[in-house]
Image (cartoon, rainbow, N blue to C red; front, side):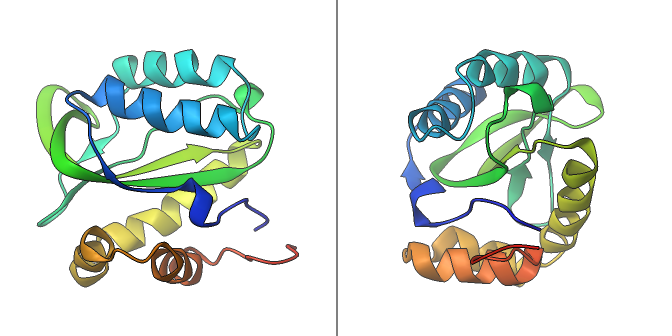
Length: 159
């Protein structure tokens, strides 16, 4: 799967007070890099408001915000490790919140690639050791390599 994924889209110790603030910082970072269109930021926040993506996994809650393919220039995954957990709405439960520490922002240019990467992410989310590692590792290259292996991302070339 040919996805743009390197140290530049991994954000460590991101400080934010709200889910919207997390999404805004992450999405604007992708806009600045030219990976997504300007419309991506608003679309991401709107979609999260309608369809929450927080997952209360065992030990460390995660969120997988994503939006429609027309806002994307280049397939990418941005990862943020939050300095302090931020409440996100729980996927499929309108009123519930979960304190998220890890955010995987997906920018996919085809619907089927979104499904494929979501399935792989779900396997990562079930692995407590990997989640713990990701939230404590300070070396972006190490984080990149672990995720690339777990998500089967080709870091050079592509399919």
